[in-house]
Image (cartoon, rainbow, N blue to C red; front, side, top):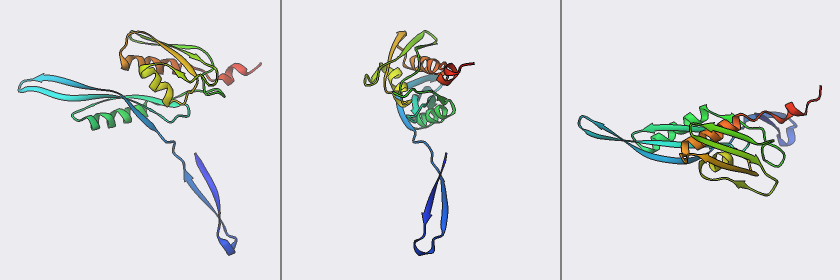
Length: 173
C-alpha cells in the first residue's frame, strides 16, 4: 500500500508528492515453548521448539513453528515461518466471520461460529490466540478432540482458510 501526501513549501507554492510504503504492524504471540532433549553418544543435547502466532489484526494471520539451540532463535524461526504461511480472512462489518465453519487437523476439531456485536472472543487456548491476532472481535469457538496446542491452532487455521468471500454469495445471476 502506498500513500501519498501533498507537502506545501511555504512561499514557493511548489507541490511535492511524498510517497512512502505503509507496512502492516505485525503482532506476535508465543503459544508454546518446549524443551527437546535428544540422547546422543556423548550425553544429552538440549534444544527448544517454539509455536508462534503472528497477525496484523486486520484479517491476516499465520502460524509458525521453529526449533533451535536457543529460545530466542527458535522464536525468530517460528516468526519467519508464520510470515510465510499467512492466510487472509474475510471479516464482516462487526468483525466476525460470515458463517459457521469447522476445521480438523489430526485429532483436533474446532467449531467456529459468528457472534453478535459486543460478545467478544469466546474461545480458549491457542484457538483464542489465533482468532484475536486475526482481528476477529465477535466470535464463539469450541475445541473438540485433543488438547494439543499446536494441533488446535492448525485446526483453527484450516477452518479460517475454508471461509469463502461473502461477496461471492451476494452476486445474483
